[in-house]
Image (cartoon, rainbow, N blue to C red; front, side):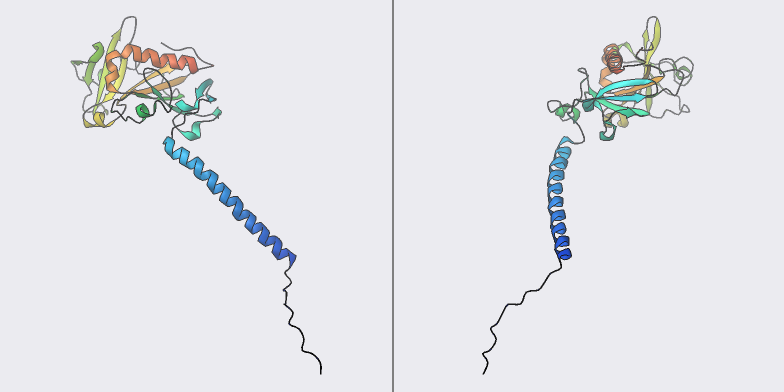
Length: 246
């Protein structure tokens, strides 16, 4: 009588190709976990920065025949923080220091104390033959209601005529001996109260380059210093076509 066969564990032979696929699957999962971890840290920093950058790396931005050397922390939008050609560059600066975002300046850029100190600047190719000061005599002077009212910093404030197209705006004019007047437009009423920078002025700089800057109405009290600071910033950052047009 033969002895019963001893129970022997059965092993299933697994195709090596299947094992390779399993290995790669685990590898992919591991890499995804690392990527998510790294991305989470980067995104967390990005969210904490609120879209700002405290990086001071200087980028060379080309608009037309002009090259602008701009630190990353003065450039408003992340996608614009790069070298290369563009048709428009948006910036923000803290006035009067004319510096960009930093941890120390965070409250100012977030308007945390309710004191508006930030200027918004836009460089773009010149679209009109005259800047705002040059447009006063041929255009704006025929669109305003006379007489004007005394404004801050020896300016005169004019309401626009109803059919001018400038609704809820005021024209600000200040005479400058030997030059075209200082001219800006400011929002009026509730719109002005809600805006961080309700006033706007554009000037011609460089080679066929227009610079528009928006600013709090409070800065009109010392408009000569404000205008000089903006033009000085343009002169420092323009590396070609840097001659400012008066």
